[in-house]
Amino acid sequence: MNEKKFYVLHKNALNISLSFDCGQAFRWEKREDGTIHGVAFGRALTVSENDTEAVFYDTDEKEFNEIWRPYLDLDRDYAALYKKFAADKYLKKAVEAYPGIRILRQEPWETLCSFIISQNNNIPRIKGIINRLCENLGDDLGNGDFTFPSPGKVLEAGAEGLAPLRAGFRVKYILDAAQSVVSGRVDFDRILASDLETGAEELKKIKGVGDKVAACTLLYGFGKVDALPIDTWVRKILEETYPGGMPECTKGVRGIAQQYLFHYRRNTDAEK
Image (tube, rainbow, N blue to C red; front, side, top):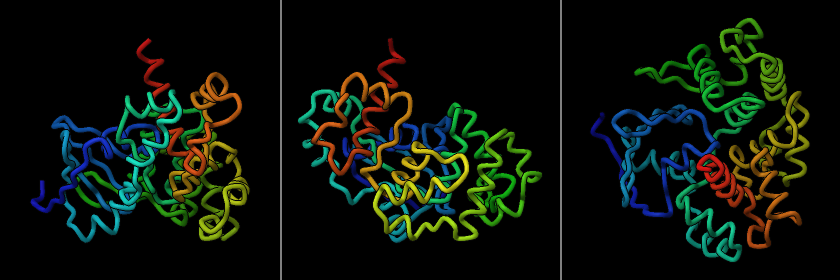
């Protein structure tokens, strides 16, 4: 690996492995040597971590602060959030079981496209489709890494160019999303400046984008941390534990809270 590296002390407030592998991003993989590798914002990155620090390879302090610090939401006080969440016993258990999950601030277009692909799909297949999309249409960064293609490149490729993705019915939704963004019918700047309801309605102009994909895009792509994606797991949690809605202690940050609840419930059920 390149000698260029940057260290971040963390402990329980940042867990790279959990943050990259809890269903919010699909371009990170754990390697045989224990490091985690992926691409975001057109940059390839390799990360290793232990109980006290994370080491980011092939980056320096300037790039880390410009790209990876906001990507990892490092300027948010998660320790304070943990104290707030402790008011709810179930959420407290989720945080104690999986401390260090942070909401990743991803590129809006990549997030939108990825969660369109995620519909009625499992994670290995989602990753496979996204990898093929990047390999076929992204820019080659070397060493087997590719950027996520722009909406313009996706639109130019058309249905024929997207055929190698083996994405099935999702292709028409991906193309409509690309067309919507390129034409300005869906405006990311307008979404960023809007409230949750307005942002969701803007995204739902795209074919195949419903409440869940819109909420995921707002949460992971626009940093709107009160957005609440409801999938099968979160629906179960709401029905069984919070029939009256998310607890008061999650107000304003429901998206962060649901990530802990989602990961806790999914893994608790898997262990049964």
